[in-house]
Image 1 (tube, rainbow, N blue to C red):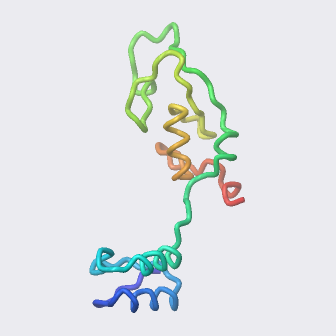
Image 2: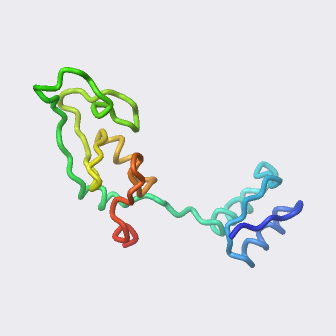
Image 3: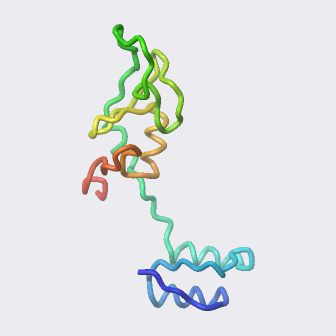
Length: 132
């Protein structure tokens, strides 16, 4: 639910957030004019929930080493990590998601720490299991 407000002082905004417990998007709130305490309270009210997967869940995903197919003479998009856009090199560690998309292990781990879904097909990696 999104609410729209007129011009509010930072304390009025915080009171409104506490009352409604809803996400508020407001173009006219200037965080530079808020005190440190007000910013902390705003962070606690809005929340700082991580939307990604836990390191424990990420560590379950298979890691392999890249080796180019002997029969592959032409480079294709499938030989490039779509997260960093770098070509895979022999020996690079790769992470494979359940949807079968593959990324550099470091890129995939960083991505999944802030996102629960594959960057190509948007399939949620562990579905409801990521909530536990």
